[in-house]
Length: 360
Figure 1 (cartoon, rainbow, N blue to C red):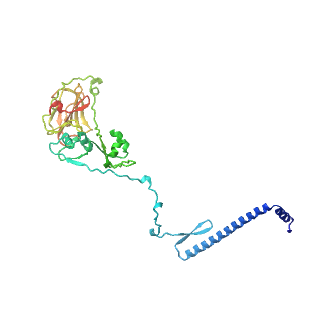
Figure 2: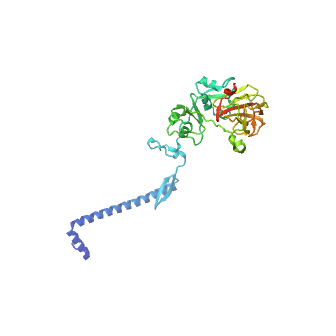
Figure 3: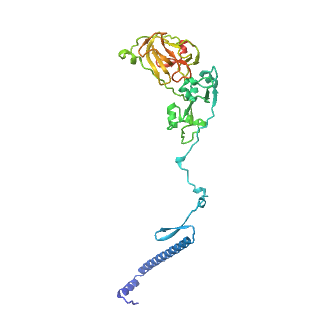
């Protein structure tokens, strides 16, 4: 077989000499021809689609044209919310977004009790089988003004000893457990708290902390050293160790209990108040922690006496007073619900029941 070009003749001759080369070359040709056929078909389809889209737009069909490469593509226009596709396959529904999780809030249903004339914290606690501390635990307002425990006041009665905690921003199950010294498991176990993993607390709700006791703030008056000349620690005088009534009245409105560290005696404003025993005045002035006008006398033997809610003060810090000496007038200052005197006795900075010393 001969061709016009000499090199072509040589080529045919070599191909004839190598049959494998012929097979390989034929495969390459087939691949190239198939690619060309696909390319031509794709171009023709794109041109037809563009023509159809143009015709549809011209006819007012709800389609728009966008350019993708060099091919006109028709896209549908959704005229209303009704045109949106409806998701019917539940298996395709998106998973919940974890940051939008909203747990249950506490659901409490507490028993209440209205204080009657003659009621005492001890008597109320015994009636419901709880400790007096729990009365304060369920009624936090009493920690600011214990004299609110009076006739007509409605109290929340917890079902068992514990604290009803008002949840504030930043509170967590862990912080409550640390604050009250109660295991987290005990707080979770109380069903009405509705605590489920991940145990989130929500502000403006209330959580019951079983077995907890609400802490009370205890204000500490100045020491003898702070008012003694030259800062000495030796008392100027030492009291007798026995006490008399600071006022001429026995009209008790509240006795000593966990939520109230003293004795309240009601009487007309402006009644004379005397020192219950000899000692040195360590505080005489306005107290911002609820006592109002307050006098504190250190008796030099571990005892201190407090005289709160006064209308006027007749002594100064550092002054020595004797048992029965006039020191001021009763009043209604500070956290007070009526004219009375708050009388308190502390021994070595620990609050004790005044009735043990003055015989109520």
